[in-house]
Figure 1 (cartoon, rainbow, N blue to C red):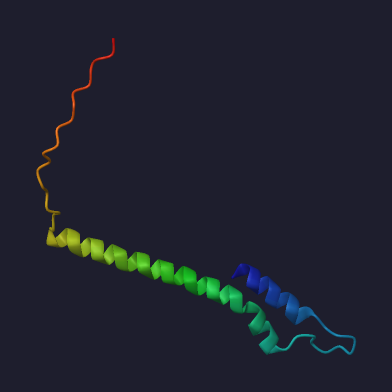
Figure 2: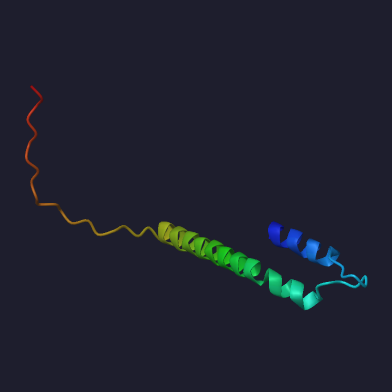
Amino acid sequence: MWVSGIMQGLMWRAYNELGFLEYSFIETVEAMHPYYMIRAAGGLLYLVGALLMVWNVYKTIRGDVADTAEITAHQPLLKPAE
């Protein structure tokens, strides 16, 4: 968003040869659209992380434990290094 703010500021400072603004308001908004999409994606990731945390806290408070099955496979003993 910092980069989009600099870009918008430079667009507002651009004048044509007659002294009018070179870019209209809608052109600055259109130019900032990709930056807003990136910001929305970052916000969505933040929200997903917060929801995952809430789910994890809920499961922790509830005390759910994964089912543990007894492992029957035997590991061969390692020979000591000679």
